[in-house]
Every structure is written in structure tokens, then in C-alpha cells.
Length: 495
Image (tube, rainbow, N blue to C red; front, top):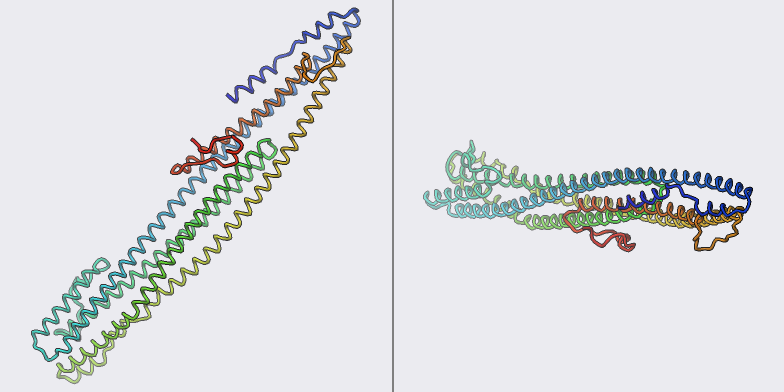
């Protein structure tokens, strides 16, 4: 309907006016010479009016061309908006996947800690059994076999509980070339198996920490890529604004751009707060894990002391049971346990926690710098909008003064023509005479056409941008910017 009304008005302007009243005035002339002069003046006036009408038609054609150019520009802007929304949705999905992977890694780490505590309890139980066997070294062979069975069953239970990480039960207990049978062989197998289980758990904990670090790096890299893409889109939009800088609808487009950037900055603030909260949660989890490891350090030291005592008790048992002095000397020189059990491996988790804290501090500094840059950009755009509003007000004043001067000149020219024809008439401010009324109607018609074209273009761009934003945020209700609601161009919610 908005396109049909300007066309109808222009079609009315295209019709050639018929100077009926002026012709009637000439027929009342008393002399033939006066009638000829009036006819010549009327013909000259008709030619002038036709020339002005041609100029107005050319102006209408230029306005239609400008409208087509603006429609093409808004089509490109719509495509860019759809692309930006699609990339933002992809970034959100990748971010959610990274968060889920981090949660899975944390769950695996907690499971490893529980399994390790269970292993420690099982190893302490085995140690107590070995000490009991040492204190009862003078007992019978049946008690020795019972102790061997208890050690084997205990290490099998431990192997079964950690079977999710590696298959320790396959092939039985490890064997030694030095101890082929008896309680020494079983003790060697139990200690060797416990050492393998502890090493496997340490590898699992290190792997979970590396996986979480890789996920964090991927999230940060993706955030940087999103920031670069957003800056490129903003540069493209700025170029489009420069192309349509001389059009009358630039002020409305800049206001919409400022509102969109406000919404984008709000979304970025929310994402930054979520990332900051996620970093704080990760840091809290790491501190909790570090405290747990520190609480477990005395337990591990105590475990090493008991293993050392067990090693000494088993050495005494072998010395008491072996009659060969050469075998005794070889067993006393064995340092296998101290080579395999290294307390320095526990410092790896502490170093990882310190590295993550440093990375979190660097990320926080970069986020604050990016937020400050966005705020400065919004302030620059606000100043540009204010400047364009002032220019628009000045242009409106010039247009009104030009229109008033043109109406004054038209009235004077018409009054002079009628006065030459012998009609002494003065035009009033109401503009009820035929010739002047036609010219004034033409001028007001052209002004109304330009205004309607601007309103149609602005309404079309509002609908396009509203639909683009509604498609991008389909999971939540969309509200129009406050500036549009205050000016009465739309309601509070888009439907």
C-alpha cells in the first residue's frame, strides 16, 4: 500500500493542467490587442509550467533510483546479519562442547582419586598382613600359606577395582628370576603389582589434566577468532554506511546500528561473565584437588615408611630362612623399591595448578581490554549519531525556507501575469486561487512523496532487521530497542 500511494500521487501530477480560469479571464478583454498579449503571456506561462513539470518528473525518477539502491544495500546488510548470527551459534555450540569435555575430564579425575584412595587402603591392609606375618615368623607353614593367599586375594581385589584403566589380572602376579617360590615371590609380585597400579593412576591423572588444558586452549582460540570475525563484520557495515552517507535515511540507519551494537556488547558482557565464572570454578576445583593431594602426601610418606619396614622384615625373613651366605648378600643389596617409588612425581599436579592460574590472569586482562575497546567504539558511534541529527535539523530548516521562498516567487509571478491580463487580484495565505493553488499542490505533493519514500524504506529495513534478529534468537523472546519504542515505530515485543 505504501508503494501504490506515491505512484497515484505522481500520476496525478503527470496530468497536464488546463488553464480554464485564465482563458475565461482573457475572453472578457475589451480590445483585440490586449487579448493577443494575454494569449502570448499565457502560452509563455504554460511552457514554463511544462518545463517545471519535466524537472519534477526527473526528480521523481531520481528518487525512485535512490530507493532501489537503498533496497539493494539493505539486502546485503540482511545477508551479513544472517551470516553473523550463524557464526555466533556455531561458536556457542563449540563452547558448550568444550565445557562438556571439561566436565567429563573432571569426573574422570575424581574417579581416579577415589580409586587411588581405595588402592592406598588395600596396600595398607596388605602391609599389615605382611607385618603380621613377620611377627609370626616362628609360626607354622599353614599360617604362611594363609598369609600368601591373603596377599594374592587382596592384590586381585585391587586389580579388579582398577580394571577400568588397565588389565592387571591377566597372567597372574609378576614373577622374579631371583625369587621363584614361597612368600618372597608372592611379596615381590604384590609389591610389583601395587607399583604398576599406582603408576597407571598417575598417568591417568596427568592425561586428564592435559585434556582439560587442551580444551581450555581451544575455547580461547575460538574466542579470538570470533572477535576477529566481529571486527570484520563491523568494518563491512561501516563501508555500507559510507556508501549511503548522502541519503536522508542515514540517521535512522545509524541509530539502528548503535542499538544493535548495544545488544551485541550486552551479549559479549554476558559471555565474558560466563567465561570468568567458568574460570573461577575451574580454579576452585584445582585448589580443592591441590588440597586433597597435600592431605594425601603424609599418607604416601607413611605408606613409604611401612613399605620400607616391610622390606626390612622380609629381608630378615629371607636371612633367617636362606642358609647360603651368598644369597643373603645379594638380597641385602637389592634397592628395587626405592627406585620405583618416587615422591617427586606428586609435584606435577601443583605445577599444573600454578600454570592454569597464570593463564586465567592473562585471559582476564585480555577480556578487560576488549571490553574497554567496545565501550569506546559505542561512545564514538553515539557522537556520530548526535552530529547527524544536528545536520538533519539544519537540512530541514533549509528545506522549509526554500519551500517558502519558492511559494512566494510563484505567487508573485502569477499575480504579475494576472495583472498584465487586466486582473488586479491579491492572493491570500489560504491559497484558494486556481493557478497558485496548483503550483502549491505540486510542491507539497513532491515533498510528501519524498517523505513517504523515506518512511517506506525505513519501515522495510526495520522489518528485515527485526526478522533477522528473531531468527537468530529463536530460543528466547525478542524485544525491540528502546529508541524505537519511544518514537512509536514498533511495540515492545516482535511478533
